[in-house]
Length: 96
Image: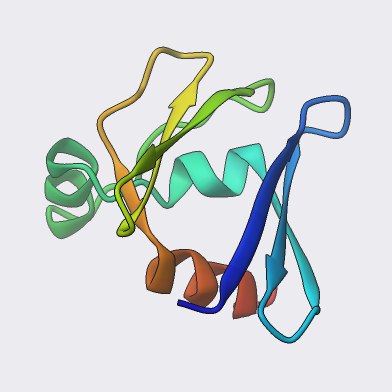
């Protein structure tokens, strides 16, 4: 795992990720919610749809899931997706 820190910037509606090499990346709350990998969101994508993400979505909490990754809890009460560290790294490396 090369993510060293993850911080919620509620005022900016972003999450700041610090990688092992010290590089920083920023992801919006909306982008993270849209990238949810829970069973419902994954099934929706496989059927050709996309999860609905309100522009005012906010990340309420970041909960660790062992050494595996984090569970993100959003203001729409969506809290089923687990974001493994490698998946967050991939999202951070993807241009907006």
